[in-house]
Length: 86
Image: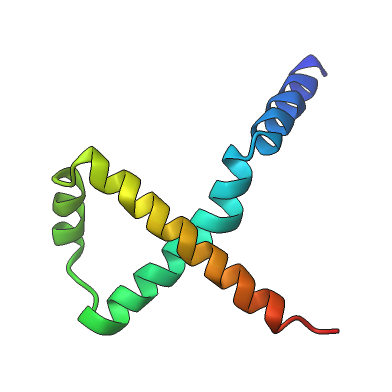
């Protein structure tokens, strides 16, 4: 029972600190949108090209990608908010 309480406390702390909230509510939808757009424009690359390319990306580029995905996620939420059923 103590493990469930500790897990709940850890989850609450992560979610209330905006880290998990931003990641799940903004970054993941933004990443999905950007990946679909890239596939639509350039086509789907081979899996080996993607996995080899991920290891070559420098750390600052990952931070930039995270920020772009976050902004795209905000756009997804805005479109979803404008088209909500009333």
